[in-house]
Image (cartoon, rainbow, N blue to C red; front, side, top):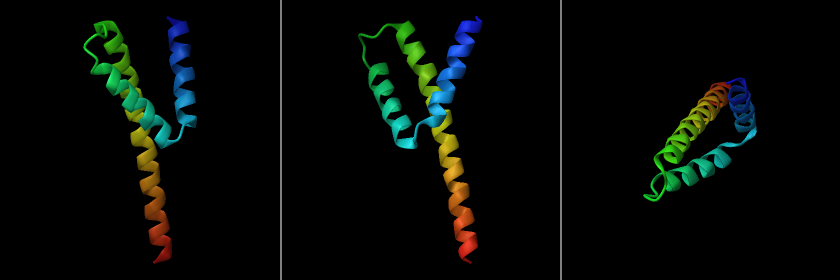
Length: 77
């Protein structure tokens, strides 16, 4: 149980280091795999979980970028 927890935490830290484009590229790859009818249900389930984690990181990066843009725009006025 703890081993899986630490692996997830480690992967989460790696994801935070990736830029938005890298996250989206991995997400697109996962989606292609999920759509493969030859893939087992357990593999699809793991890919969906991974995709959800990547989506969370993408949304956070977009949120941070939006805040930075708004700050820049308000500083110009």
